[in-house]
Image (cartoon, rainbow, N blue to C red; front, top):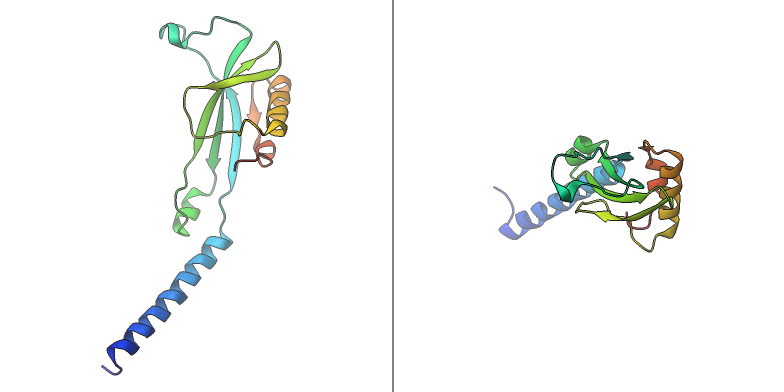
Length: 142
């Protein structure tokens, strides 16, 4: 072995920095790609009172977000990636989302009036739901 311990440690540290920079370059090149959709929920009438909607003008919609290149992102070293969803109550009479229903992981900031307006319009025009990827790209809390 040639070199002192200090020299070897310095060379190792330099190699670790180079390696981390290379990993970061891969992460910078491969970004998560998201796809979002919203669909009405079919409520099971036999599951109990807490699942029943008594007002026919209210519908439950589930907003779902999927990372379409999840495996590629994980291989690139991205961390804390996950798909998500959230349920919302939509009033067909007013054409507006009334509230979040239950718990979930895909939130829209309540102050993001533009996204809410676009989402309300989309559901009003597409009561069977659909792809809202472009709509969700503009939201505040990504």
